[in-house]
Image (tube, rainbow, N blue to C red):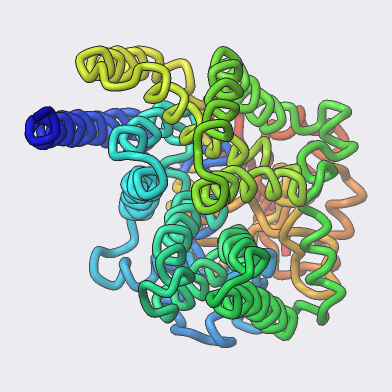
Length: 513
């Protein structure tokens, strides 16, 4: 007699769960959108966010200018540079620049268009995360996983980050996991998974962790679909080898030696070089440490819940499919932090695996008490909105303004030397010891700028190597200018310097020919 009554009861419970999930997922998207909103507006400022945003937007703009030259290599050129003096950025695949260039063909080049691409990918990541967790648990757990991910500083701060190791490759990785599970089970064609793997690997190396781990997990279980698992893992490795070989053959790559140097540079030495450790680049280092400290501080209270949720999950979940997908969500960010320690501070992928664990722990602990779950979701959303300003990075707009001033002050084709701190990742032209200017200035100046000229001797050397440089930009970054450099500039100038900024003081010298 009780069996017939269980059907409508089950239907009612299912509808309630579905309603809770829809509301919680909507809250997740709203919280993420509000959290990312401060990232829009204005120039690319001096910070890790502005640095990468200006760099990749500049690459995309160059694709519009000169087409897909050199096979579409990421070109870090300015309008005034001779094409033979090109510098290519070979540390990552070129997919992000290609994507933005095609969007810019329709919208025009604008900072917020680039940020909007990243923000849309962040929102898509939340939806994909909810779908993936739902496929191995239930609809409420998936929605809560998305809400908790929306509350993370990684979403607030890095959701609009225009970066290869950012929201776009994360969305593609989750897409590989979601589509690949059914394909590897024999329920769907494997072709969409292979295509997503190719796209993910063409954006960044991070996108290849998921297909390799997913394919190997299916292969290790044996059965009729193990060949598909091995095919997916092998395909991901082939994508990596092909992209790496393509990068190694680009002009200036110097073969695989340069590529290996690029990969090895993504370690702790990049995050804190000896010069930075001595206080030479305290502004950027302070921002990176500050960002990392804020994230750890925000997440420490959640670690006991995470561990409890993980233990409960492993105890209650069936052995194979759910555990495998669960670990696939956790392992890629952990592996990425181990292989590229710099990414642990700069991109915070290591925290992404917390969201499903926290969501699983909360839903399993509270069970079917949907009113409690709704109240908790609302409280979390309000807390996130209230705490959002605490995760804001300090960004300096002055470099962009200086770049804009250079564009106004200098005639087309001008070359500029500077003592401004340089980007250690990007080598200069062949035979030149000077490196490309930080892009948050160059993007706006659109003028060839070579940095690292911090002494009178370096100025003499630079003028010999780059005789076409007829201007010098003197800035207080990364430290107060050397008095001897000032004296050398006064002697080498054909007129009194022009002050571009008063606070802090930035001077422009016209050098004698």
